[in-house]
Structures are given as structure tokens and as C-alpha cells.
Image (tube, rainbow, N blue to C red; front, side, top):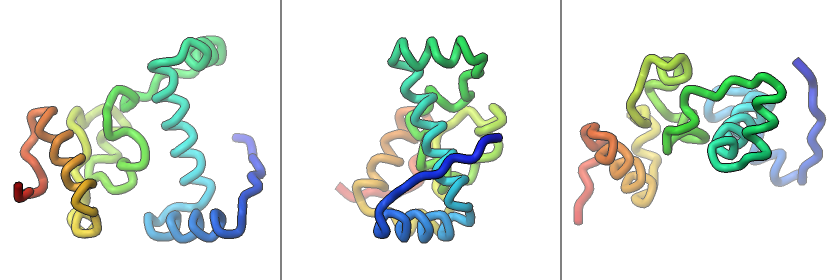
Length: 126
């Protein structure tokens, strides 16, 4: 493992620190997960990143094709099973976090779940 030093604004640093604490992670874990997810998502559509992965022997993440892969992993009840390739569905938001979602977030998660033949987690009113 290598250490990376990142310079950011005071406001961004405070936000990162609070975000990481909320999810029970370190700031480094948050930065690593989000950067890694972005690379793996980009590898699906970009020859440069795909070639970089091939040359460096980086195996594609089992989750990279999933529309929920990225920040949603922080709130998913299946994050461990998904990371290991056992869970094949899409995000199911932990109950205590589901109540914090805005309506557009609930709609997004619900649509994703329905598109993947899962029961919608939210009872949305038209």
C-alpha cells in the first residue's frame, strides 16, 4: 500500500471528515473507495483506463457493471456480499439510512430496484 497526500479546502476537509465519521470510515477509506469506484466505472467506457488496468494486472471489480456501484455502497445492507460477488442484486438501503433519503433519492433507488426485478424498497406516491 502507498500513502497519498491530498490538499483540499478547509470546507471540503471538514465535509470529508464528517462524511467519513457518519459512515464509520476513515477519510482515507472514503477517498480510496470513491476513487477506486470511479476508475472501475470509467474502465467500462474508456480505452485508456481499460488499457491501464490490463497493463497493471488490475482485475475488474465484480460490482463495476452495477448502476449503484459507488457512493451507494456506503448505505447498502449487501455491501460485503456484493463486494465478494455473492450478492447479484442492486442497492438495498439500510433502514436507518433510508429515512434520510430525499424523494429523488428514493425514486432513483426504487427505479433501480424495479429495473433489476427486485421489490421496491419505497412506497412512492404519484
